[in-house]
Length: 327
Image (cartoon, rainbow, N blue to C red):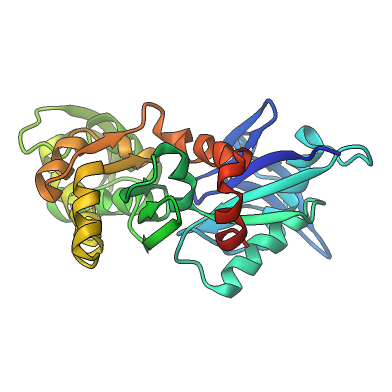
């Protein structure tokens, strides 16, 4: 019986399931009521759209900074998703491949497997995010970076798999927090994380000169009144540059730690960037100036990991790499 293969990406911000005509991608959040068991009342967008939460219920984000903090909640959500998109039948063999950050420890990996297995399937293989990009290259050493919501994965890969990889705990969520802090400290203006995300997406920029602006509602902490305040790209620039410069420092360290021959190959083949954070305005120029190598951003960066992982698990050429690195 030919097995059907699905890619699961339990990210800090979005939970994704991809494969065999299935493309599920929604916020990784659940409305939960706890008792003797964990009852998931709603998940994804449906959970966020509740006006008034039911009694004894709470909104839960089961994954943060790339780590599954609440396997029971994630498992319950996946069980519902599988029932809808990948129902268990005796005539349908299924393999699940789960994207994980490169820096996860043994216990953290076990939590991922436990959560996914709670959905009803046992044939599970973990794939480090950097390895998923292997089908993008022809075999030479190249650098990859996945700018996620909770973590950023940076690695060097070749036809043999991962040469070296790091997970940085700075990503989209950290940028939002830094924007909040900068506005609070410099403008005495308080906004929530959702507003910071909207500001980042609207006017976030790595260009030194950017006149973009956006209005957002927040609280003036001096008079405790809610106000509509115009925020400029210049005002939040320190937050953006702080986070992305730290990620680029890791990239530089990774590059300089390579043997000279591999450094030269990476400088030739360049850096391939994906993930939601890859859409930051000016990122290509910023990385090219800082690292002095070609930079390529995927045309659909938010789904790049899923798409390339699907190619990875479907192509027999990579079976040996998956056998050595996947489990």
